[in-house]
Length: 272
Image 1 (cartoon, rainbow, N blue to C red):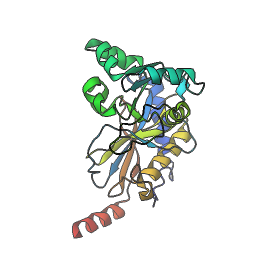
Image 2: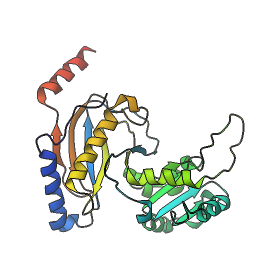
Image 3: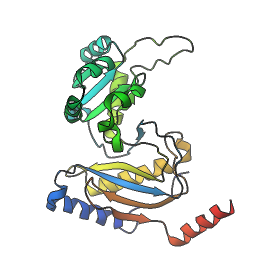
Image 4: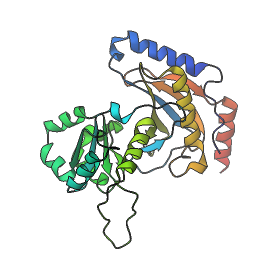
């Protein structure tokens, strides 16, 4: 069942977002801030082991990005030749990736200071699910600290590995394109062991206040709906409060659980 929380019932979310965007226009400290996030506090900790895998949260009406507007890096398993040829030759994916590189070549070409170059050169990184788990050691804290630029997981084809058999090196360009479009147009979150989640809801000077409010509601609905598990339905103990902010701005409140409801939940928790 999805949450009954309506964040803009009293217009507070709209006012907070309008104020935030206004400050981004006038405050020199916020001039470089690009993304707007919602900070969601739950009544209980998620208790999830952090695996550095972003989960997609579908947005109903507002597309955050398009693949053609982003510089996308695809990290494949070795060797990358077959994947590169299949993706660059097919019309569905010929212009999607700025670069396709294998893990081995990634290690060889980008070390030390060059890792900062890689970080700045690409807006989005996606990786074959078979090599994604190797990337924390390869890319390092520059990408993973604070979930700054975590690689998304994609599959190169719909084929599933058979038990005891090596998976064939298939590549399905339309399927790869569909996954990349989903990653770009929707938002995401990374499970953790805390009671707080940060989720991107829009971009300064690109996403309207109304669209951000709709995105906030979509995030709440998906993360509260137990039928969406395991991707969604992860909120525990209800939603206590929600704030909005950019990277360098103060957090502005847009929702707080009514006190009588919070006290009732607290009493029920004590009885358990």
